[in-house]
Image (tube, rainbow, N blue to C red):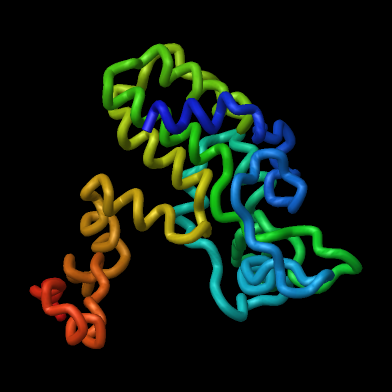
Length: 226
């Protein structure tokens, strides 16, 4: 992980945007892989689906637990989350990473799959797992300062939870990153049961398609629960 991360970071083809309002624009210097809309003037599906300007929200809203989890002063909350208040003073929030939810004269935003930030976070975790704390803190504090937060003088005692939370603030509403992080760290069941009492642990896996099993019985056994 470290060697591949070093290669991507040191090649110099990609650079972090210091201005967080530019991170999700199609010209962002930190974008490694993004999907262009089918037609010029179209923007992202994410912007059209997640943004709303009327209440109650037509599709979905951010969970208040995510809103409360941001650290004080985090610019990601200020710039990537939008708050709306209804007539009863009830607050609703939506992701505001992609700001365009209608067509524009020319496309302004593409759907971003991988950003340079992800490479840095992967390298931080790899450094910490190898107990290379000083190198990890250099990367982590650089990101924290960019996000409007204070730097760490010492590594948090529970750094795994701190890093997991930081990744949540960075990658919310982006291709199931939170789900994959929780699954990878064996914390998925705990977190899901907090809000979904009917959660079963086998839900973390999808069933193997029967058509594929018929073509290749070596895929058996089927995943538990299906």
